Image (cartoon, rainbow, N blue to C red; front, side, top):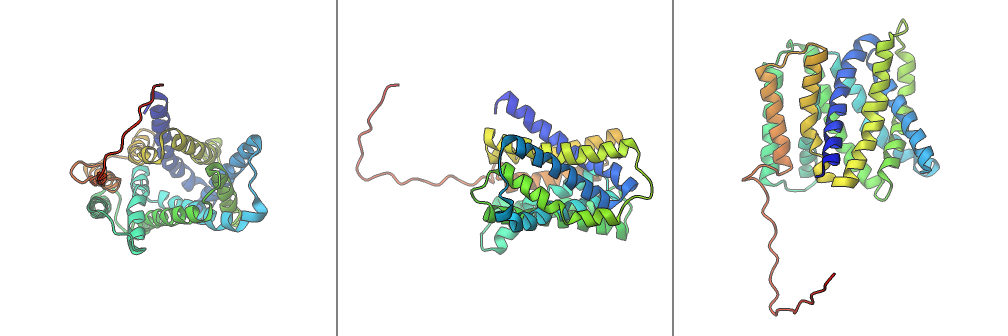
Length: 308
């Protein structure tokens, strides 16, 4: 990985980690519905402008149903659920719950008939243990709001897993940037009534408005553009390693700007979930899947050497 790609990967981890910080700022001021809806609308407008500049058509008449279904599953509902969680959980906790997406991807594949490897199976178990440690021994006060916040974060992770499979099935040959823009617009439309019904009683401060704009433009629209640029540069397998960086930066931002304490329990839970992700990606020595052996031909074939 060249230095420029490594810089973009770390930058993406910093940006997506900051999204949980901005939600923690916005939700107490404007509420769950307005936070999620504003994020979607800022991101949708930004991506729409980018697609116009790049002259990439959305083919809205042909694909509007797909954009609506995948958009609400991949962004609208998860953003609502994470916004709800942001009212009760620290930023680092939210990022750790977000990191459980690969766990649910394995479980959904297993339910669909795909047998997981030993490494992936171990990753699921370690991930469950990590979430349990975080919930049982973490710094948050136990109670129904906390339980519901954990459930919301895990529910968002499940929706991300489901929507990834749906997007792959519905947009097999579509430019990923077009898919991101169409889904953001499709997911934003159902949230407009949510925003209208949850208007704050008074105009938010400039700081909160700036946080909403940063959440939608920087942490969603620009982050998606950066994400797909990384996939084109270094491939999807290396790009998804950003999953390891997001919780680390989220906990760092929360501690620096919101005074959220990083306890031993939260660090342990975060570490276990990140180990689970590494196991699922088969990056842990001793759990890596052995490469398939290629049978040698019975008769040797002469090889023609070419000089460049």
